[in-house]
Length: 257
Image 1 (cartoon, rainbow, N blue to C red):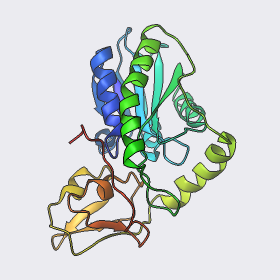
Image 2: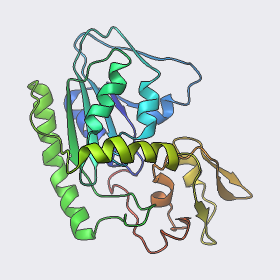
Image 3: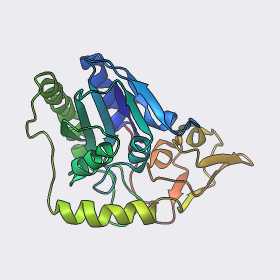
C-alpha cells in the first residue's frame, strides 16, 4: 500500500512509478483526511509493503502527512516493511527522522528512508524560486534512475545511502521546520488577479478545501498548508502570493495532468 501526498505532481509521479513496479495500490492522503472518522484504519497483508511518498516542505514532511499518520491504524501490522520516499528540490534534512518519530507514536517502525530530487516548486518566500529550465530538465531526466534504484533497494531489503540529508540538517529540520509548520500554515497571502477565468481548477485540486469559489473568484480560508498546488496549476497564471511571486516561475510535473 502506498500512501501519497502531492502538490505539483512530483510525489504522485514517484508514487505511480513505485506502485506499478511493486504492485501496491495508491491511497491519497489528502482524500483520506476528508473522512470524518477519528481513526483511519487500513488492513495490511502479511506480505504487504507499506510506503509513504510525499514532498519535503522546509526540511520536514508535508504537514498533511504527519496529520494523516496521527490518525493512522494498520490492522494486521506485524512488522511488515515500512518505507519513506520523500521528494525534495535539493536536500531533505532530517525529514526521515521526523517521519520515523511520527510513525513510532502509532506503533509503526520505519524500515528505511529514500529521497528523490525533483524540480523545485516553493516560491512563496523571498529567495525561493523554481529551477531554471536546464536544471528542471536535468532533474526530471535523473529521477527515473533514482526511482529504479529505490525499487531495487526495496525488493532486496537494502538500506543503501539513497537519501540526501544535505548541510546543517539539525538546524533546518529541528529549528526552521517547526517555525514553518507553526507560522506558515493557516494564514496566507494568496490573491487572484483580473486574469482569472473562473475555471475553478484551484478549488478542485486544493487538498485541504481551503479554496472556495465566491462570485466566480477563488477565496482562501485560513487552512492553507502551502502545498503550492493552486499557484502552479492555474492555467492563466492568475494566482499570486502577496507581491513576491509576480516575477517568479511556475512548475508542475509535465506528466501529471
